[in-house]
Length: 360
Image 1 (tube, rainbow, N blue to C red):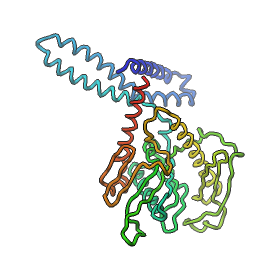
Image 2: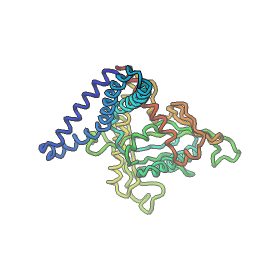
Image 3: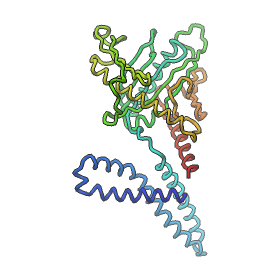
Image 4: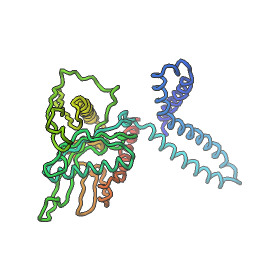
């Protein structure tokens, strides 16, 4: 392991020990805000420091084993022990590198998933419905909560657009790699000639920022319109102007909500989505500005940013970012997404480690 990395780990270990002392200090304990902040930092460092201490012990073990190599009688045993200890060392160093990866502060947050029908007309709307079901089942399997924020239904079923809020442990951390263009190749339900059509949807995943961390937006920068809800929803639909549309004038970014009966609740929901979209747009700009990015594994949610193809006739799903093909489309569409999400996360971490190594 490089000396620069060891020095960084030693510095973090000193900070960890300092935090231990601070968290037992009465003046800190009675300051709830500071105590929570320090506790959060302590928890974030815990796994890293435990791993580093194991690595430090391995270093001592290696020195002891190497001294035994000079003893002819036990040299063979010492060589075998050396080999085992070196393997443990390599494994711990991999774990330490992982813990040192830059952490996205948004990973811990819930997220919004926005699915929009693209090219393909009615079939695209039906594909948007299928993606909604796929994500819903995946969330159900992980015991995450799914809330529909806004839905614009297609004329013959499906969705022109649907926005979900996903709440659960590390929801954004896992779902953020779903952003981008999704393409489907299949015989549509509406096709009478049996021809295969190609349709697309775009998916945008955005972190849901906590209210305490929301950026301030001037009311002068917002245009707020009310309109009557449409679609299924009961007697209140098309009878009151409860639906809300908010436009952020400086950027032109828009959000709307018609899910609630209350205009006030719809406004609050639309505003959280709007802020998430503004925040996501800023993140994409920062990503584009990084000259050392090899690949954008974190999709943009743009139509041109095709990340995945679902080919029904051949029963396969392909992730174009890492050239991964899964020959089990039915299970993927049924919500078994980890076979696609895990490899992309691993590849993302590999790219981060490569970048760190080059910077060192």
